[in-house]
Image (cartoon, rainbow over all chains, first blue to last red; front, top):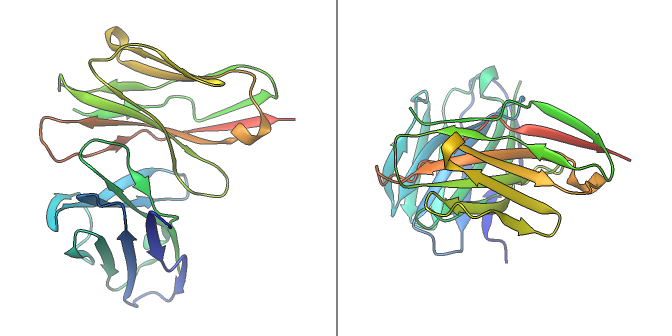
Amino acid sequence: DTAVSQTPKYLVTQMGNDKSIKCEQNLGHDTMYWYKQDSKKFLKIMFSYNNKELIINETVPNRFSPKSPDKAHLNLHINSLELGDSAVYFCASSQAVNEQFFGPGTRLTVL
Amino acid sequence: AQKVTQAQTEISVVEKEDVTLDCVYETRDTTYYLFWYKQPPSGELVFLIRRNSFDEQNEISGRYSWNFQKSTSSFNFTITASQVVDSAVYFCALTPTTSGTYKYIFGTGTRLKVLA
C-alpha cells in the first residue's frame, strides 16, 4: 500500500516534446504538491493544490501545467521540454501543516 | 521574508562520531512549524520530525536529537554515534501558517557522509 505514488519513475525524452507525470495519494490528504529537485539537490516548490484548488503557483514557466482531477490526484504536464527541465520531480501530500509524504520521484532527462 | 539556511553544504565524519546539522530560519509569523527530512542515496524523502513554534522542548529519538531555540531562530539536529547508514542529505523546512497556504520552505540541504 504505497502512500504517494508517481508514474513514471524515469522519463527520457527529446527537447521539444510534451510529457506528463502522474501522482496519486491514498492517504486522504487535502493538499498535494509538486517539487523540482535539481542536480545540486535544491528542492523547490512548484505548485500546490488544496481540495483540487490551486493555492501555490511559484515562478514556473507556463509550459508547466498542473491538473488535479480530484483531491487524490495531481498530474503535471510539461510542454516543449527544454534541457533545463532535466531534474527529479517529487509529488507530495499533506494534511494541513502535518508532515509531507513524498512520492518516490520521477527522474526526467531531456536530451 | 521566509527563509531557511543550512550553511553546512557537506559534512564528513568517521563512524561513531557525533555530528550536528545546523538550521537557521527566518519568518515573521508567530505560528509556524519546522521539519527535518532525510534523503538517503536511494533518493526518497523521509520525514524525521515536526516541531511547532510554541513547543521549545528538545526532542530525542534514539540516536537523533533536536534542539529548537526561538531566541536564535535555530532548529539544529544532532546524530549521536553516527553510523554509515546515516549518510544522506538532510533538509530542514519551515511552514509559516498565517497565509493558510501551507507552503513548505526547504533549506538547501546538508550532505552528511559517515565514513567507516
